[in-house]
Length: 272
Ligand code: ADP
Image (cartoon, rainbow, N blue to C red; front, side, top):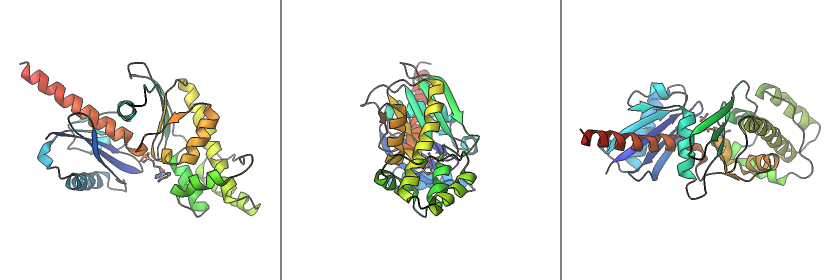
């Protein structure tokens, strides 16, 4: 068998996807980026191949993407995460419908990508100046509330009434604002939903810069948080599609591209 690997070296996590010749996702792995991107990426790939009982020789093409993509020297190619994200989203949402808008919230930045009917990227906007509207912001909030990021959603849905207004635009300021809200006897539930709505408002502004066209796809680690999904849908006034594995869309896109690049090279070799 021939397999194709996409590896997304993000600021927070390394994501690896393996696809078969039909571009089906057959396995993936997510591990912390840490300080030694290259070493951790190599180790994570070796572990994933072992788990899938795939021999290294069966991996015929590898595409790297993400913040640290140039550090992964074994890759046959590297591509921008915007392109990989767009390709991965369309493949992951194939049975749902055509994706025209992508919202991606990562550890350190957030993006809105607009696609045309053929799935080409026509425009994108990015927010990386500050941690507000990123996974890092949610991590700081969760830490200050002494809960896990994976618990934020449960707290969100237990909040009643109008969401609290959170004015901080940076994680560092949010920290003292949250301590102040706790001191004023606001519940953890209401603070969490307030934070989700403040992020949602920022994201909606970002998406409006590229234009909102349905279907809207949401990915990145924070898309695992149903409470945040709910806040974005309410602010946007549109339903959004979240794939089964939102953290790996970009690495999956790189694996799909690896498959296309390999098949294309084969055809040109045969044509000689
Ligand atoms: P990057 O690509 O920049 O490394 P990711 O897309 O992997 O970032 O997103 C990382 C963020 O996802 C974390 O900072 C965290 O806030 C969020 N996250 C990770 N796992 C979960 C989870 N189980 N539930 C909710 N949020 C999560």
